[in-house]
Length: 418
Image (cartoon, rainbow, N blue to C red; front, side, top):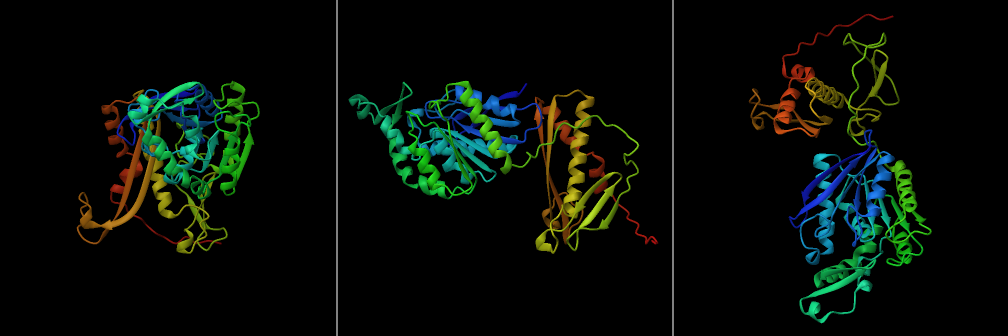
């Protein structure tokens, strides 16, 4: 059963936007950011069904209501297209800060236009999918109802989409007209793989839009016809087909989401290494490539190409950070398990640099440079402030952390060999 969590975050205008994060049972292989159609919302039938199907295929999905729609604050009538783009970027920022940055951007109808325009501002995006998207966001003009003198005098207009009427400000239409001229250029310069899904008999956004987007885009690009579907994907078989296409097509462009699974209970076997001894030996194609052997486990270490290596594996400092990061995560997990706290996942990000001692307030050294490690810990779960503070305190007590902070004596000897 997928996990679902309601959240709020500030949109471009400052209004509180309502979002929902849905996760598969196992650690996700990717995170998708879903942008709904103009007349829909995050809880539309299409959004719900596509999300459910994607989570069943191992992809976490974050969807939200644009400003003035659904449960989000703000006024749709005062919203411009650039505000939708800003809301998308803010949603990606929220994911990056609290969960994991989105690697798939999915947009339905005008949401498709939005993800095409916003993708360059979301650097982690590895794949973009549009569903029934207009080639030009100004296509909304053909959905205008007959002019209403009273609305016109107030600087407003009304759009009719899929039988529903919406009040919008004239500035929105003007903004769409201004933006429309650059949409083809944005598609051409997208820089990531693009999947275009469109129904041939779409009565809201004609199939010609799919052709124009495809012609403007550079490879890799793909087009799949949603034969028999309507614009809102109102039939469950159509949404299942769309989700299956997204999951299958995007798989070749994605890397595993950098969020560790909850570690299993520790076990001991005859092959486990518990002596703390490992062996490092030169091997591999590069001049600095090393094979690290720890009991029955092996891994490769190397220097990056700019340093003269072949980049066949992580560098020495990468491995040092990996030791600290894994020790931190394990220590936090063990403590939470003992107290039966609702810690769902732990993510640790680390960076190493050398800084001037004078820039380090907590360092005893006052001259020269010192090694500086930045450790960022993300705790996922329904934890209160006291529990979170305690887990951060416990992180500083992991054994590797204590080793790095204590005086370490290294004895070097030469061992005879055959």
